[in-house]
Length: 112
Length: 111
Image (tube, rainbow over all chains, first blue to last red; front, side, top):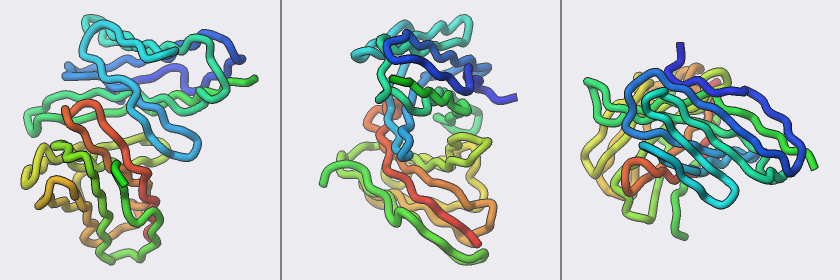
């Protein structure tokens, strides 16, 4: 079982819709990350969370530590939001200070 | 130019050959990371470095060697390339260990 599970795997939305992508994890974490990978392959770090909620423009990320769950919301979605969104967690292990595990990603397509 | 760069962007090599992928960042970030991305596995951490001369293993370190003699450079060496190491490799750097900036990636094919 993967330590990080994302849902849905694929998501198609109409422009303007509110979008939610979910991430669940099974280990104790130091931080949770949301990344965006564009069709050309480039990866951008969107958020790093250890508690609560963060907002950048139309993007909102929340985390519930007790439930080991995070959500990424996109308000007023636009075709340029089309990308793969990846959830990742950082956690200490007995062997090193900062291992990371990644979800498989959610492929979002926003249609005009 | 400022930022994080990787070279080469594309590489084809033969099984058994040594290959070095370069990563260079101009921000003087302490932390640097190497990942591989494969269909069906997503991103996986190979190695990371918290500072010059300090490196640590990630999830999939076998078959790879890293060094970090200078803060700005973090080369990844495949000592004897295998077909299973065909992948896209991403380097990243971070000032705080958490918020990472990714390079453009290197697509490596081992024949």
